[in-house]
Length: 347
Ligand SMILES: [Zn+2]
Image (cartoon, rainbow, N blue to C red):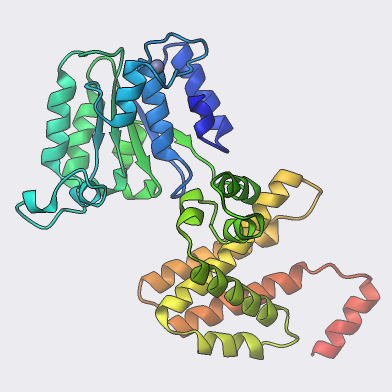
């Protein structure tokens, strides 16, 4: 059953199927979500549902009719994928030797104009033209402005899907022309289950799911080495955060100040905050999410600072000491007497 191919996106799937069943598709959707959660699959399933020849109820594509099969192969004349050249080469859709220059990592204005020209024709075979731009943040500024013109005067019977993990990279004018559909990061249990479905052993599946940042694609490509490096790193971070004084955290920052490792430490810490947040959201149980959110946000800020060429050691100290402070403030105190004794000893 095609919609079952996509896991963990019940809300977005429900919204899309309702729009399809009522024949009320928007002219353009911004499909937003982290890498590897099924955004392209979602767009392909929507294209199949919009053009399936079997006529099943509830916008359910049959997956086997001529239209569904051609859309899966990428040969359906009313479904258009636009990707940067570098991505086409990577997927083996274009031969590097056939290009005059190095394959571009951007989607350029010519490519958007070509898409607009093709969309101006009437339907060839299906019921709705679907234009999928992936990833949309690779549209350069001129290309975005050209796309904006098309979005402002949309061709008839056409729906755009702009796929992105970085919506802020798009011009506000482009974003505001699109209905936003959020695809959620995947829960760990779901990633683990999907890995097991693909033949990964249960323990390994669980470990990969824990390090995958909510991305099934990431979990699938994770190697055993990477996995053990990350779990070792996670253990060192937790030990430094739980240590009685700050020395361990400062030592860890100094030891890992090389840039790649610094980024990885922040990612591991952020991932742990994120997965705990997801499990709180799934399980409920009254646990306070605010400190975890602060820790998650702190990791995001520090990662951004590091990317802007911040000093790795200072940024590591900032994130580790910051996380220690957040955790010590949120640690439950058993009684006020004990808390005040602790404070006296601490000064
Ligand atoms: Zn079909």
